[in-house]
Length: 194
Ligand SMILES: Cc1cc2nc3c(=O)[nH]c(=O)nc-3n(C[C@H](O)[C@H](O)[C@H](O)COP(=O)(O)O)c2cc1C
Image (cartoon, rainbow, N blue to C red; front, top):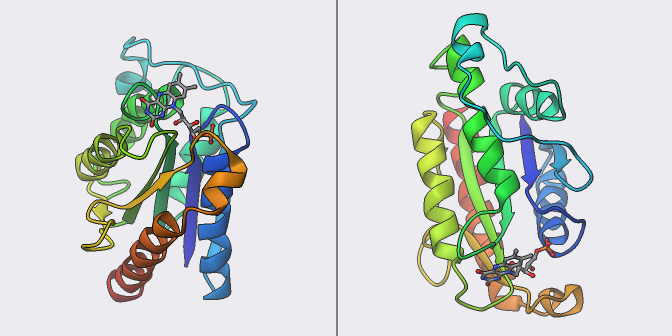
């Protein structure tokens, strides 16, 4: 089974650290994984030109083509976002909007896959839950089954407090527990429903 993880930070730092940790734990449990990181990539915003509705593909030729492939070729999807302005990053917002081009091919293309959310904020309560809710909404729009890690800090997914520092996020044991709980349920859902 294959899991596609998107790191929606514009740089390789705390969110990527957490996502790589999640993917390596999945590798230990024999899941195949692929990471796409937005750092250094060109992901333009949707122009609402409606080209995709007619032509079944996006008119923009940029790095989103790797995201389209990854989303389609996976059984599980992890959206990992840094918190920006109290919610998801602008990179992730562009990716979400441009998934419309996959819907244009087939409304059911992503249906039945399993999804989980990782949110990394500089502040302890900087908008992680709002980011999770946005990710869960995206999952639901596309028929992807959203997974929770359950109570005690992972109601909506894995939430981290980075304090804007790679050293500090490595010490966020509460965040890591929320990741482990969410991963356990993510694996359970993949094994049960895929
Ligand atoms: C433009 C911008 C807006 C941000 N807004 C928030 C915010 O609203 N809440 C918060 O907790 N952290 C905020 N942060 C801090 C980042 O979420 C935090 O530093 C995070 O660890 C960055 O992830 P990265 O290291 O993967 O880039 C913001 C950072 C940037 C650059």
